[in-house]
Length: 184
Image (cartoon, rainbow, N blue to C red; front, side, top):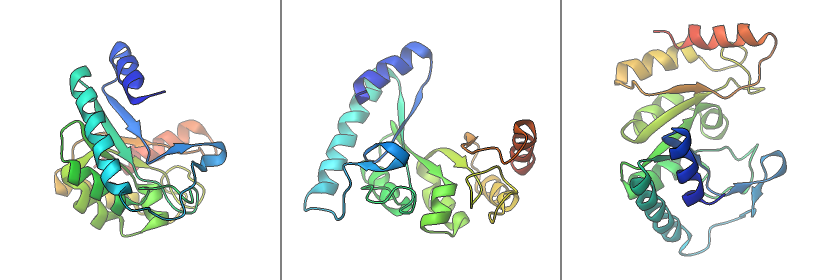
């Protein structure tokens, strides 16, 4: 669906925060089209497109969040890295465009999660979490989500945190692990 259609449907459903990626994602998260390298002018075209999306979001009372991805699960995705998403969103710098900071992707792509949370803080519209490896609930992998949650609190972040993960076992236990990690 187009951003315009998505904004209208979101408004009808009462959903005011809608997610974007740097490109379409096909089977197994492979970008459509696969971009091997940036061509001249791509970044300016992306900023221009995001400004147009902000215009329609403003008209519909919506906010779009641009989600970072990682180069392992989504190779060839333009503007997928945390740094690229931060660069675009901060350059556009409009209230209708925020970052969907997916810490699972940041961990794989860049690491240094707390530093990225701090750098992105003025533009974060949502934080998404899953542990790595496996994209499972907090506590099943290498990420210290209790430390990340405390750092976000100390930074003054009070926005939404969502778990976009696969339960490693029991789904209720996975939800409890998420709640436990993010109750600070």
